[in-house]
Amino acid sequence: MPASTPGPAHSHRPGRRTVLRAGATWPWLAWGPLFGAATAHAPEPRPVQLPPVSEGPFYPTARWRQARGRDWDADLTRVAGTAAPARGEHLALELRVVDARGRAIDGHTLEIWQCDAAAQYHHARTEGEAAERDPGFQGFGAARTAADGSVALRTIRPVAYPGRTPHIHLKLLAPGGRGEWTSQLFLAGEPGNARDFLYRQLDDAERRALTLALAPAQGEGLRWQSRHTLGLPG
Image 1 (cartoon, rainbow, N blue to C red):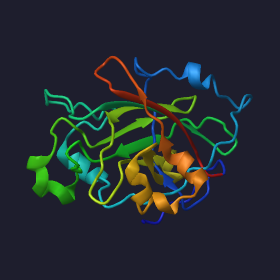
Image 2: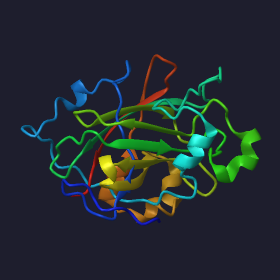
Image 3: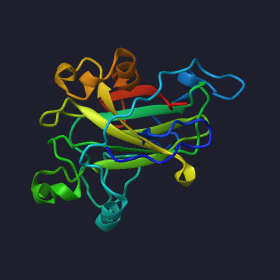
Image 4: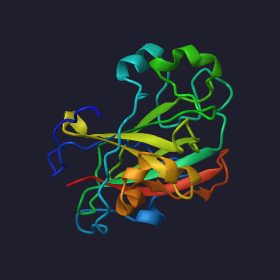
């Protein structure tokens, strides 16, 4: 796992890596009823700290993304210039980033990446497999956390990759290079979790911190939705 940079000013611990960034709230994402207004005067209960998990070999570097010339926004199910949307079951992913005291973390960039519905990563190392890729799937997306710590992304329900249980990679970047945390999100109830070598290394609290509960969604071509809070180490 690559070395990480020193943590941000507000008590983030060095050696942790992640990716998150929030954009404008999308029509199908409503944080208010779930989280309310998170401020320094009304902190939430302290969350489980985000455990670090390896970024793996398929993190698409900024240089490669620039060379590809594609959009890398928060909607991974649509690619500019491609008519068909991503194959797979579309997922509205609502995340919220808070510090060790439950206070909202804003202005951080959240990145996610995962394989497509055909279990193909979109990465320089897999260019030779481009014919098997889903052209309607970005493979990578990013957004910025809002004032309440929320970030909304649209992707597909992750599928199993050879040797791995379904998962979504994430990286959280503090402004000005003040910190970086990397981890992975898993799905509740997946049979492959018990066999996954990374999932098995986590204790029960860490698994709760990284496990998404999916619920059925309607509209906008969605099949699933999930809301989850990520707690930065402090």
